[in-house]
Image (tube, rainbow, N blue to C red; front, side, top):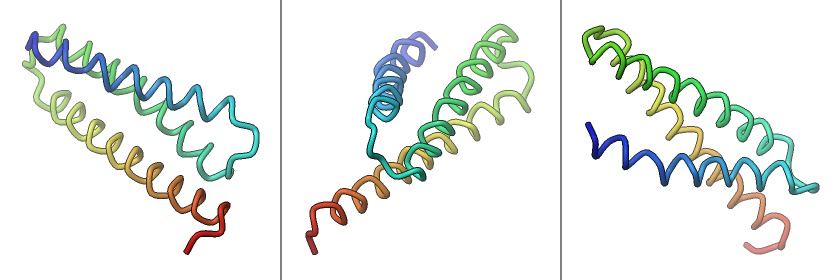
Length: 96
């Protein structure tokens, strides 16, 4: 459990930095902004569910499953953000 608690710090910080970068970038596709906002909401919910699951000592299985499912959803949003950002950048530079 301690390795999980230590291991979540770097991805959480990187996700927060990505959200900050999105908010500070003026000329960004609106879809990327929506994905970043979804990312923030999912991250907050993931942290909340993780704390509740930890406090209940993993005894409530639906909470543990919801924590895992939310983590997978957050990963999917991050992958979607990466793909759309890559496509947006290629479209902006005119690359094929």
